[in-house]
Image (cartoon, rainbow, N blue to C red; front, side, top):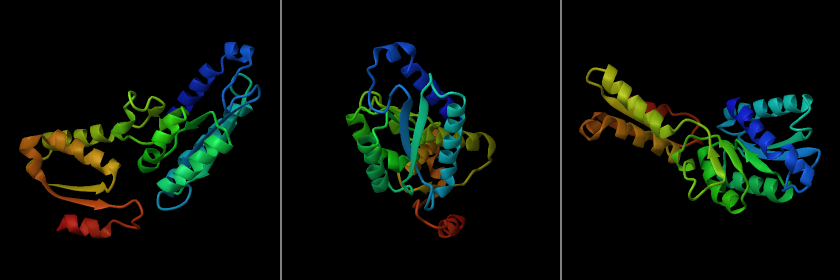
Length: 224
């Protein structure tokens, strides 16, 4: 919910009265509406995160019921990419080139967002509050149109490691990580938090794919 409030504040700033007087608007902004879009996994193995998109739809409806943003109604187009990066690319191009959205707001997932990051920056389409904590979003020099939102996965991993060292006697650590940039960020954070002298405390690292139906086999591996 915090990112929705923040993105609404951004829209308020962009559509302030001086811009309205000039009558010169970019794609997705008219006197009566602001068109924004995103992709969410409403289907597939990551469909639990589809609740994010449903909450966004509800909040923008609430904003519109209050009169919109400086009199403009928000038209929010949220499409189902099933957490599949190729599908994310296809749908994002549709939103930008056919639907002419002003911005992409809170697109979900590290892999899906990596797939569209370069394209959206080349097109100079604001990508507000990316639903991922990957460290790559903190790169304004190369990707100035990408704005992250989630806490850093690297920092989370670092804090987990520091907590273990401070609170667990003779720890023996097993790591289960997603087999992509998300999992790599977490693992690198854990390793940094442990420090060079304590890296041997990690007994085993197991990986899983987003498409795996369960992680039962990995848990048996780590338990052993």
